[in-house]
Image 1 (tube, rainbow, N blue to C red):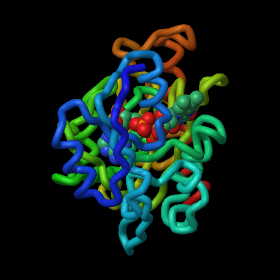
Image 2 (cartoon, rainbow, N blue to C red):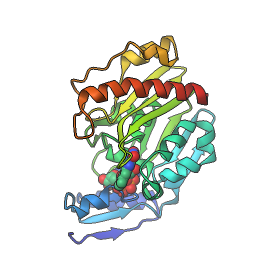
Image 3 (cartoon, rainbow, N blue to C red):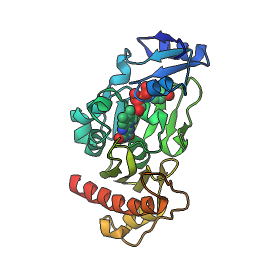
Length: 267
Ligand SMILES: Cc1cc2nc3c(=O)[nH]c(=O)nc-3n(C[C@H](O)[C@H](O)[C@H](O)COP(=O)(O)OP(=O)(O)OC[C@H]3O[C@@H](n4cnc5c(N)ncnc54)[C@H](O)[C@@H]3O)c2cc1C
């Protein structure tokens, strides 16, 4: 592995100064993706900015209508947070289903969202719950953030500082997971708010996406049976050793129905 410099700033401003000082400098959250990537020689940054010494990035703040989760909040903390369990229990349940204990104890919500793995769970929740991605420079709507396979609207040197979630009236998440990694073969988040219903799918295609036909059907009748006749086209979906596109298309409807059932159960 190429030698690299390791910085451990104590504040966001210090981290930003380091990141903007060199184009070959990257942030490190829990290292769950970054370090294996470096070990495989797929990335070789000259410098790493470890975010784990910045207390502000680990905060969870509950407001009347929203929940703000710091970028460095680890999956296990999302699972255990009283505020998150009370305000958006779906998020706590989602985090509990990520990977294994080692991954949940190191991986972070900000690292997951920045990485935008096409099979990751959080992108579905961020899009489905209509969250806002808060960075050191601006606020980005979820609809504008996820641009495709491992691509986001983040610019070079831009740091996610927090995710702000509006409190939904009801929300559920269901995933059919790979038994080896627990990544989503297909995962569906369904959320109902005063603005309507949002359905976001991860794992099925090259990136997280919404399903307007399901949103309209659930807007008219928020129950699993409303999705019975809605079929997803397999054309743009992924095929791999875990399942072909037709299978994934079928799973989207099955998981969406389960997510609606979970949302009704939890609300
Ligand atoms: C064995 C295994 C199983 C897994 N199973 C699942 C699963 O079931 N479901 C799931 O959703 N995920 C799963 N993951 C992914 C895991 O949950 C992590 O969220 C993911 O790997 C990102 O890790 P991290 O938070 O440690 O970020 P890092 O690996 O530290 O960083 C990831 C990328 O994001 C950048 N980055 C980090 N933080 C920020 C920030 N604040 N702002 C801007 N850029 C940033 C880094 O520079 C890097 O490019 C699994 C991972 C492993 C290794």
